[in-house]
Image 1 (cartoon, helix red, strand yellow):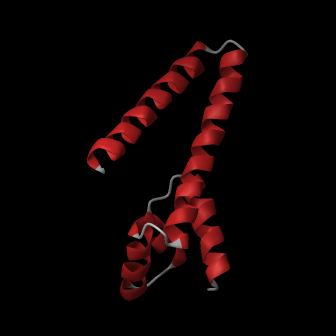
Image 2 (tube, helix red, strand yellow):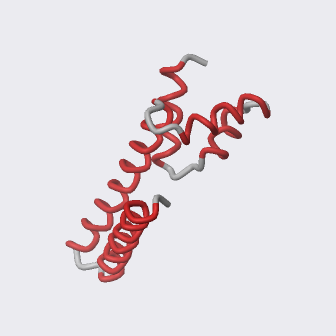
Image 3 (cartoon, one colour):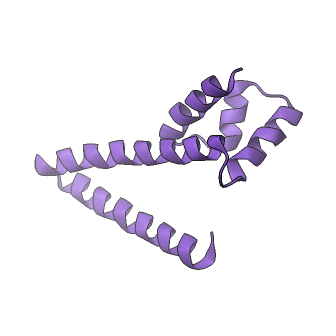
Length: 101
C-alpha cells in the first residue's frame, strides 16, 4: 500500500473512532507490520499520527455539529450530550497538558 493510501485509510477510520489496533486489523497486517504501524501512531511528527489525530478531530466535530443542530431544533438530550462531550474534551486536554496522558 502506498503511503498516501495508508494515510487516507487512517484518516477515514479515525473519523469513526477506530483505534490504531483496529486499523491494523482492518488493513490485514501481519504481526511485524502491525508493530511497525502501531509505533508510528506514537511518533509525534509522523504523518500517520498526524492524520490519525486529524481524523479523530474531524469525527468529533461532525458529532458535535449534529448534536448542535438537534439542540437548536429543541432536542434537550442533544444539548445535554453536547455539554457532556465538551466537558470530557476539556478534561482530556487538561490531563494531556498537565500530566502528558
